[in-house]
Image (cartoon, rainbow, N blue to C red):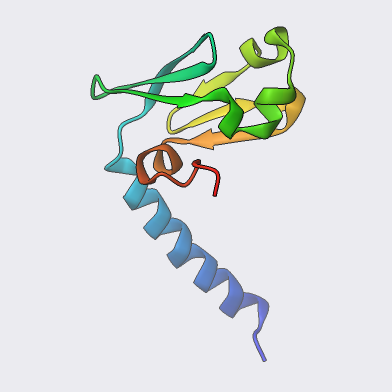
Length: 98
């Protein structure tokens, strides 16, 4: 049986590993919508572009809702439509519908 102390210890290790992995990744500096694409500008000067249609919530959103985002380091948040995209997902291709 796991105790609270044991669970917290496991979560701390996992959090530290996640934190260390993210520090090696570029951050997202800017997001631009152009026609049917979303362009994610990264701190290492790369630009990753994906079709808007890959993200169902963004496809269904209005132009104003799409533009209402917050960039925070490795993530882009669209609070109004409850969507988050992370740089790790962009780089490893896990935002590709499948």
